[in-house]
Length: 129
Image (cartoon, rainbow, N blue to C red):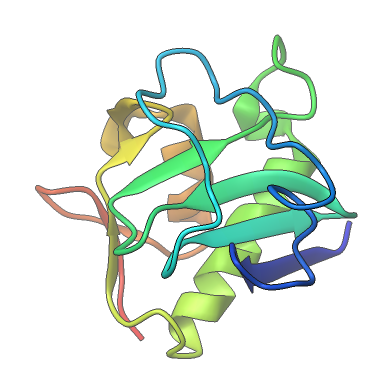
């Protein structure tokens, strides 16, 4: 799988422009948008992760909504791409506090972020440049 991290407002991101945003995951509490500072991670062209400006909240779309997030190759590729972007210094320090409305520390997607190099802290999952 090929993962690409883009600014949500980047013309290369078709979501919110040529394509509608997918429905946010259940209980997510907010919707994605082409907002300054927000990021999308596309895997093989499909929206997989959406990170609000500042990185506190993450929306994640599993390939199989009924399957296990930890076994989802698309989510794994997206988590690794996000971690690489953060390590490269393009995001500053990121602390993900909530994933799909749930605490990141107990989210199955949080486990994928940890596997990609994010570190558990009392506030959430952090990655420094």
